[in-house]
Amino acid sequence: MQLQRPRLPLRLTRLKPNDLMEDSFVNLLVKLFGLAVSLGAGVLANKTLEGLWEKKTGKPAPKDGTDLNDSLPGVLVFAVVSAGVGAVVHVLTQRGTKSALARMKKTADEV
Image (tube, rainbow, N blue to C red; front, side, top):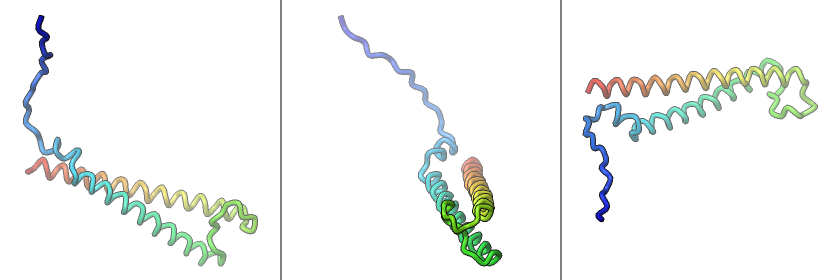
């Protein structure tokens, strides 16, 4: 008795530019660039917020929420404002990265 190899369905299809684009090296580079921009924008926004805080209050921005020398309302206000700015930066950089990828895919479709 001879064993038969199972037949695999072979289907040849034409690759579209988007098929190559989804996992391409350029796609990875754009995402890494978006990550770097996000990190840089976050650091810049944090430094700007700390500078504005010090200018308005005359005290350095609270860095440690457990420091009893800083007032609780001041720590809470800084935490809320800092989180809000961080969320805005995150959303804007994510949307920018997604927009860049969409433009690249659209350009690849036109080629």
